Image 1 (cartoon, rainbow over the protein chains, first blue to last red):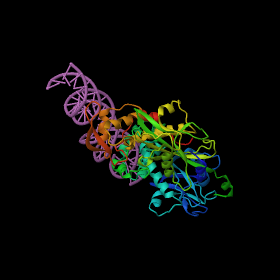
Image 2 (image 1 turned 180 degrees about the vertical axis):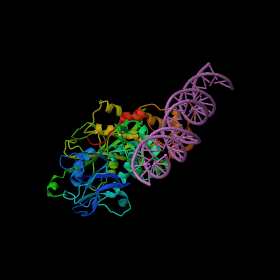
Image 3 (image 1 turned 90 degrees about the horizontal axis):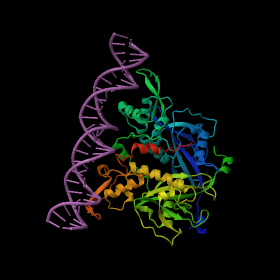
Image 4 (image 1 turned 90 degrees about the vertical axis):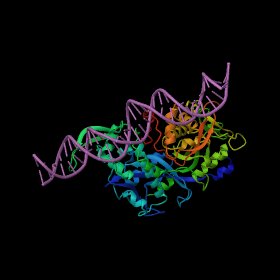
Length: 248
Length: 248
DNA sequence: ATCTTAAAAGTTACATTGACCTTAAAGCCG
DNA sequence: CGGCTTTAAGGTCAATGTAACTTTTAAGAT
């Protein structure tokens, strides 16, 4: 079925990876952005990412670009491929499709300056979705879809713990859910669910005193990757999200 | 950060789409396969798919290849991009990455012969996973991951109805779940859940008499895309699946 | 000692679930 | 016809899960 006519029509494309790295900072969801050093979109904020090299795995390219552009070591993050963007018009340089990755990170300090990217820093997600900050290419779309994916991942998986620096308290974990989902949770019911969920939290036996108040028990991540039973947002919220990732 | 050195190292790749189309037939899960007409892997069974053309959207390429190779009109299926495969060694022709799509289909008759592909037909998924049938490229991997995706989609979305030809009965819908998940469900409890779930089923008021037994009420798909509350597999099963789609 | 604060644990009414049972509506058979 | 078989549909009930709320606990501060 592949004849010489079609052979001429194959798109010769270049492939990039882009990374959406979220963190929780000051009770706000932040995303890791760089400032582009080159045309197109020179000086614009953008998701970290770049070209996949000859003979390089997609996952490897994602790790490398993250390291090069932001100094972040992605090997300890739960970096997950979540979607590929291939609109023929999405890059003014020509046909460039990008494989998007998502990860949740503890609030790491970002080594600025010096390295590849002109700047890399955490930026509040809301500032981007508000339109206060415009991003290069179709990165706002990618960010929006990554956020929706992250929100739903919190329901069915244990990755929320990836936001926390070990060891962490139940309250810290709850704040992650609250910030990503964008609404408050009942502390008591939240505790009951996450402590009951098999393999989510491993108690250390240690405690940490906050500035004031009763000391909180400290936990580490358990072995489970899937949360059962899941920790669902209310059905109202789920209905509102109502994503239809299908073709028209 | 993108300098002339890196510019030389950009992978020049070709991009294909591959489609995993499932259906339920004779109480078995089937996948739509073609027989390759060309090297590499000439005469091997493979997932339908092919090169993305210049200026073509990924979704458009998926629809076109499905039509060309199997005669199936994908515009009425819920075709969803689920993962991109980019192992540098995955295609002997060189660097070819593929964007994989997933859809659930009613049991359509496949127009054989004549067209682009030498043959296209439904094949039991088990025969492939057993190793009885080898597939070209990394298509077994793609199939396996598509199956896991489909299984989990049945839990949280209403796409199971896409397997059924409208109008359909609750028993037909239940058989879809049983075949995809691979275990029996309690008919009574299943009915209660799917009829209660808001926006899943729309009663037609009509009935259809089976060969024997009480006539079953007929339904059409409702408007909801997300299932709330979700229809979960038992937690044992969820634990067993335990996928870790992260990097090492 | 008492107050304040946040963590942790308990209470209650209610909804959902899984396993099982009963009734309903057809065709079939004598 | 009347009873049998078959599948659909609906009901029961104990166990579990949930949301909203209250109470107890363990620290530092006054």
